[in-house]
Amino acid sequence: MDDLTRLADEHLAQALTADHGRSAHLFLRDGPLRQSVIALAGGARLDEHEAPPAASVQVLRGEVVISWGADEVTLRAGQLARVPRERHDLTAVSDAVVLLTSVTANPEPVVVYDTRR
Image 1 (cartoon, rainbow, N blue to C red):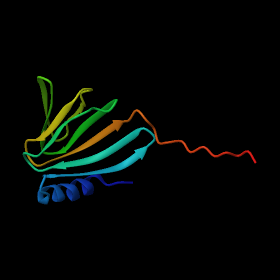
Image 2 (cartoon, rainbow, N blue to C red):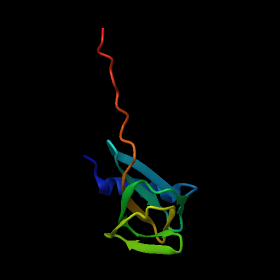
Image 3 (cartoon, one colour):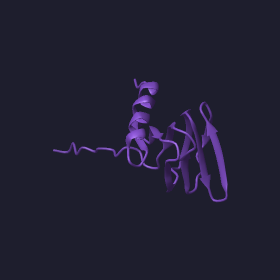
């Protein structure tokens, strides 16, 4: 079991000392399900990127803005939102930690053993 409070503390401390102001950790991988803690120093940004087939972001600490096209949403600690299914970016308004839950299009590769002998 992972402790989100510990992960948030740890990665926020790393983000605050990193040149790019970010630290992330993928801590759960179960088939197509992924959960990651992403910490950003205030003002740091995850540049525009593609969206997974399905995802949500929950703010554990601070405040962030998700922007896509001409739209944006501001989220504060305790708030949860669906990640837009189009290219988007994420900017930390203040020092922030988010929990990203995503579903990828491809589950873990299936290992097939040839049992014919």
